[in-house]
Length: 256
View (cartoon, rainbow, N blue to C red):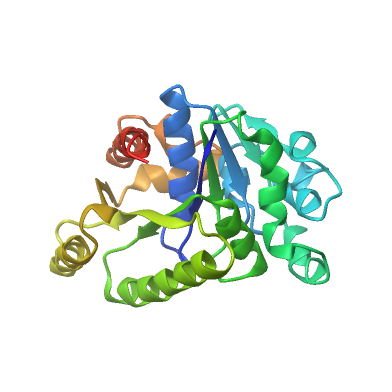
């Protein structure tokens, strides 16, 4: 049975895609069988995994609309060594087209159901909004990983996201829970960052991952080469943090 985690935050630019891609590659490096699902019409996780979104004939769009199976649409990321269900701009149209479909919130969950034994981890990169796509990701997932910057506005967005997760848990997915909060783009020299980090630990306790991902130029450069940061420069501080995060995730799921 696979662990299905949605990487979500309603605030944009907080490192969701960077986290999803690098965690997938880091887990694969630990010998785990990983599927990354790109649910963002921008297709950044797809490009960051070395798959050209402009050349896709089949993507997550067709899977959600029932026009293709997951097995037909998935591809292998040669750079990250994991499977990916890719996305491109077509996915933006799925929002409208899914409105009139039956079981519109659980179509991704249905597509994943036959593949429970194929993977150890399934990571879903959700778009930065509470949309039908994000709802599909949350309904398919066992838990949510929340990457966040240690800034004031991030705290405000976090309360909104927690409320959303509670609503999905109550109405659509009773298996859903918060797996943990990951502090990303962390600047240890900033007093505010350290204050917000301390507040998170005080309020959420062991829900806050021990791993802290620092700001890192090499992580930011890697997507332009279509290579996950942990492969692009394994020695970089950011890459080392995500490799440590993968080990922490493997340990954490043992307690489920």
